[in-house]
Length: 483
Image (cartoon, one colour):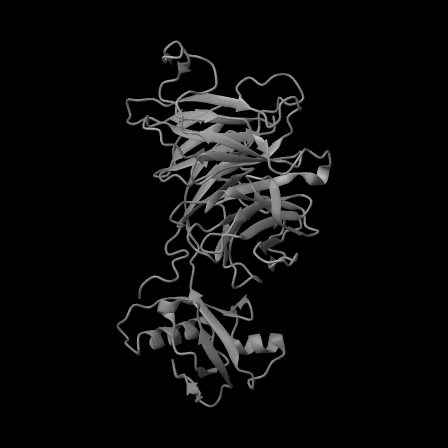
């Protein structure tokens, strides 16, 4: 096959060495003929991007330009091709495969929402709202349109008992889908007191109205046992089930039915049905008994389960990961493990990749690395390792909601980073949160909470500095958009 010589901005003038490359992409609408192109070794990303645009638009100078990034040998090209050859010990005699993807520009800081204590988790999956939990035991709801006071502040555990399990700190919260027509929103929360709570939240509809909240149920996973702290809570896509992961090594599955009768204290305004049972106005959820997926508790420090998530395709498939370094897939109906992988990593955060590969599990570790696990095969090894992804432990990982290749990480080093599965050796970019006003340079604050909005264009993060920072971008994950 003939080699095409590329001539852009002067091109090859004989004084610069040339390298044969083949330009490839995984995006069908952005593909060009996979033939060798002879390009100068002093070319960098910008010249390669210009070449791809020329080939895509058949040399039309008035066509819209698309910025591209380039991946060579699993690494983003951040030098010239000649410098890359030198690093790899290669020569111009080698034909190099160069993969190109749409450039992802870092989102810009948009707003910050103040909290009274450290932020432990955030759920941005409901359009127009951010739901957070904090170490002061409060759930807060913010509107996404502007930085202002919380629309609602709710303390699910306002008066903890004076025992060993009275810590009000919430570790995790999530929205729970409901078929309610009352206009109420529902949230699940879990924390250090080892109890799961389902709350009904009513937001103000206009300036004249006020917010309100009520607790529908308070429950512990196993009757008769001292509750162990919970590390995470996630709701299924259908909204009928909730998962909690705990320090006792258990994942508990909870039924949350779309019914009207609820557990909890009776109000004077509660109505009585024909059977004499109380029915709370506006409520649409009731919590049933939890069942253990992972088996009875095991009293060992390294057995702590860091997180558990439902498969978006089925409420009957669950994934979990924990301090012992194991990642498991479960049949939630039979309560048995269907796939398991292990490592020497202490896993402190997890999520599930979006897209068609619904059995790809993301994990963040104490040793500053991240990993991708393919639960569809029989190998026990990590599929892709992101070594030294941060300078400190990775407290949260979140898959991009629409891209099958992108995910974000948050760390105790105070940074949010965006990674691409096709380039595991370096992040696409890092997001630094604004320093506190008037303090100048200061030690980075730990990040503990991270999430994307549904469109994948806004990322929110919070932690030790008690601020939920919002960064908005454009075109993140939209690699296959029309030309």
